[in-house]
Amino acid sequence: MRQNSLDETALKTALLRDLVIEAVLERIAAQTLPVSEIDAEIYYHQYPEAFTRPEITPRKKKRLCLAGSASAHAGILGYTQHLLLLSSFYDKNIS
Image (cartoon, rainbow, N blue to C red; front, side, top):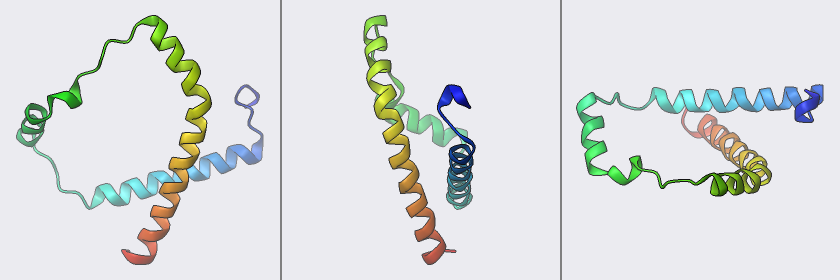
């Protein structure tokens, strides 16, 4: 825990957030229709750009990692708050 700058309270908070996110995602996934292999292939062929990645050089990778590490934490927190709001909305309006 020390390596990640977490104390027991922060760890419990992070675990609670993870559980809430997992519960919301499971509720949403339970309402979706199953996707067949044919549907997946059609999507793959209709949107090939979604399955290609630009080449990342070692230098660019290092820059992305350095820039991303600081903003990733903020992004994860924002995403978690969004999912918590979604969960609250879902509980009040859908379930």
